[in-house]
Image (cartoon, rainbow, N blue to C red; front, top):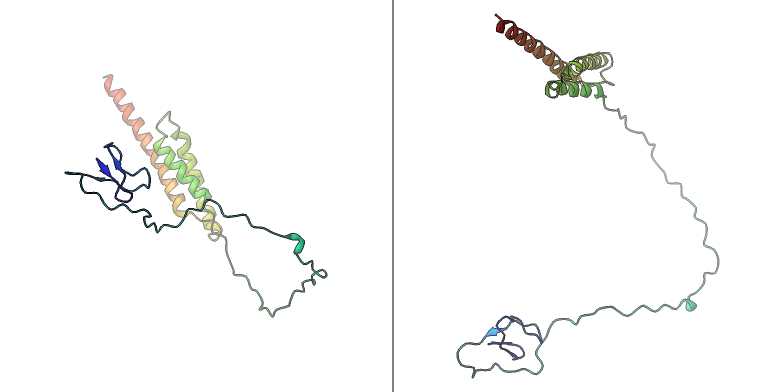
Length: 179
């Protein structure tokens, strides 16, 4: 048996944990049921009342005063300004060909072994890398990516060297197997 400490309501259902009248946590009654907490007719509730919606505002447009005339036209003031000198901003160097060279070189090393597509990607990486190096040498302020271009040339060349070594070993195995 459970009892509400706030309103004194008694519940026999063991599955109910809160009072259905005021939402207070029920306390379990043990032993004799002779003790009853004092019942308060008007329990103290300090919570603010729940307000669903405030009342709508009432406006009275008929009581508004109309302006006497049009507002004065705005006159811009001429503040004393210092001369504006823009910063000397330079565009960053273009690294496009270096990035393309590196991507082609990495593509030849990773995907290039499938269907021998690296035969196309390796030389393309080397060619774009050499173009990027020559552009960087002629105008380094406008063209960048020297390290990327060198890495693209190296990976493209490494694929070609490894492919030639693979072909040589494969050829030697074929020749040696027929003896």
